[in-house]
Length: 283
Ligand SMILES: C[S@@+](CC[C@H](N)C(=O)[O-])C[C@H]1O[C@@H](n2cnc3c(N)ncnc32)[C@H](O)[C@@H]1O
Image 1 (cartoon, rainbow, N blue to C red):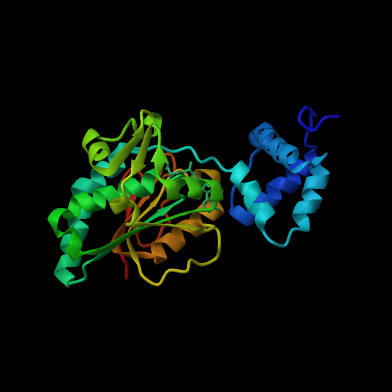
Image 2: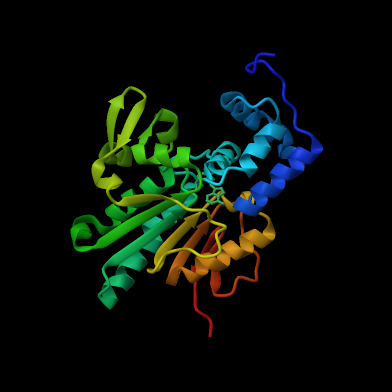
């Protein structure tokens, strides 16, 4: 049978195998409802790689020591949907309350650095917007500060898109007009490229959030991890939030997605408003 037209279906055992692999490597909890989605997305991998069954695909995955197969797998399974100004209240709070407070606090201690982490940045819409708002908040003082946005994700294709910084009308449709005019170059009717001054502020890196420790020496004043934990179970979420807290500066902010409100037992994190927490060190 032609590989392009063959109909491959996943058995119960194979689905369990893939679930366990995805959970242990990436923390993503694939429920039974995701079965047909997984089947559909992986069928494409089978076709492009020329495997005739899931069994053959899995045995190749198990023997692949390079890790490339696993990265391709997570690339296909993860949901990268995002857009500029998603969950606008977060950006309004950041602009009007959090950044002015951070700037004042840092300036008072003589430490003119601000570090923001977009954890699970997908194709860069969140991380570039954070850089734009940071630049706006510092205004004419910008050049006197050392600022950076770290943008991490597990998906290589999302990170490649982020690096390019090219977006269409739909991606930018919620963005305030002045930001679109100021920080994008129009390439074509339906294509905008983020200006170099903003790109230079953002460092994109591959990072698996479920790794036991993160390789950062300096603390962040702000961490955004939105619409990522939704795919994790409670244990994984709790571990993640503990690690974020360790990497947050005192009084630093943790923004999560609006459907990801944290439980109450998050030591040292104070609830500010829905989907926003602040690091308060309790003694
Ligand atoms: C829906 S997007 C969220 C993008 C953006 N933060 C937003 O709120 O619009 C979820 C992202 O989480 C990433 N992701 C999922 N599991 C991950 C893991 N274990 N480590 C790092 N990133 C992960 C996915 O690759 C995807 O790009």
